[in-house]
Image (cartoon, rainbow, N blue to C red):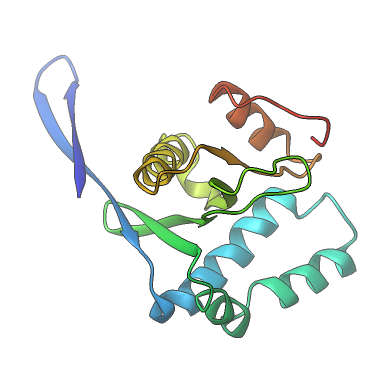
Length: 171
């Protein structure tokens, strides 16, 4: 558990607000929750980037309890859920020891998903979850981390650019 304090001065009084941020490792029992967060956050961030039929097909295929449960069968896959003041705010999915056609080293992590619900944008939760995954990858002796970003998702591209990720040809 991580909590942050915020002191507010309204000119007359000082008040202290405790902000709780918690990141937990998800289990197969969280599959339905992850599917629901995935559906909602994907629609919020990508809903206008393809036809409604294409978006709906992707969501039905990717964000259902059965598909998420199947991913938990892969020992390289780890899901983490981030909570903000005890409410689910998003999740991440990494896959350890996963190369791609441009990265041949076996000791690299694929950051497959980092999703936040729109109502939690601006709370620095994406940064906290990203940094958590970087540290987790280091703990697993990974030499690097890679990801793919949907070209239409300018918000994500800006986020990862601020995080100083180097972009390849396949943005």
